[in-house]
Length: 70
Image (cartoon, rainbow, N blue to C red; front, side):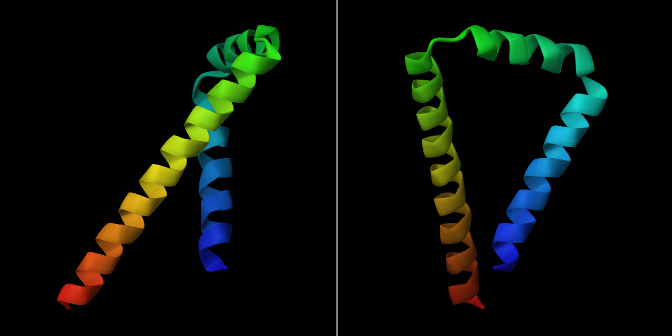
């Protein structure tokens, strides 16, 4: 459960930093996303979900390998 709160906190932190550092760029990106078709938005979301899953699985695997060596 702690990992979920950590992940949500990290997500909010990174998003907040992006809006703080690049407010104009974030507005442009949101306008670009607004103009995307529904199919492209679904495809992009799916791709990012897969990338996120792969990163999490890799981190968990590395953590497990390190744990076994100790």
